[in-house]
Length: 350
Ligand code: GLA
Image 1 (cartoon, rainbow, N blue to C red):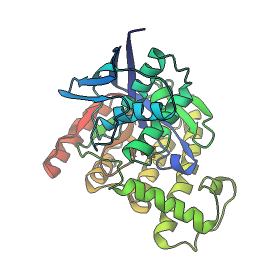
Image 2 (image 1 turned 60 degrees about the horizontal axis):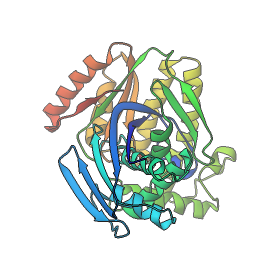
Image 3 (image 1 turned 90 degrees about the vertical axis):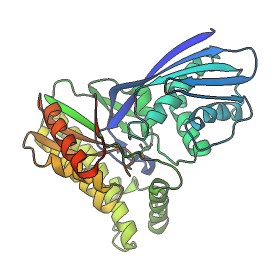
């Protein structure tokens, strides 16, 4: 096979934030925005990349090195496959993506997973979907330097429209939750403030704090708190807040599943608001712009609830609204946001 075309979609996480690297549960679903990748085999060892965003890059297989830019997600893929002793040869890659970067909608996972899928097919590597997701996570952890969990790579690999992936990140067992019968609009607004999950920002720090809490509590993972409630009052205040978020967020994911099964949108919305407060106050991964958007939601009785989605420190928010109401309300909120922050927020299609 000399030419392969692959398309992957971005994701939003409905609930279960900062739980994945703690062995907990998440509930992402796919968005319409996607990344299309064309791969052509070459006869030498050169990798060339052109993207519709007018970017280009090239490197020799085996000469990969992180450069702290978008191409790391691609160089990281071949770096890791070579490290795992897979046989590759040069390729020409063409990329066209409509997922805004830094929007918390998994543009990087869509790229890594798309390229991994394409290479898997082209060189017949026999990787399973889960192998590909795990390799994608390792690209971030070992090459890019972002210690992300597995949610985004699993979401990009498995999510379908109108269904949510109820994923147990500890053992990767999952269930598809049908959303088609629920009458709601899912509004997704990109705040226009780019987040970065790199070592320099709070993401890796949150991860270290959770690890430190586990060390002090003498448990392997915060997941354990779900099965065996432990008193964590003795932890230093910051760690107590972090653990409080992870513990309550895991409970909220399970409550959200119950609310979806009962078609109780009010309850689901209330859980989204609670998740946001916990992320903002206890986990401290929100920013004023994102809090403003979520506070604005509360002015509209047609909105059941909303919250930040993704890693935080910028990115996107979601709101669950009555059917047919989403677009109108989002337009009004975006105008108010512009007036306050002089920043253009945009609607993302679900
Ligand atoms: C980012 C990471 C995920 C997850 C979320 C927060 O999207 O890539 O692994 O940790 O943040 O829930």
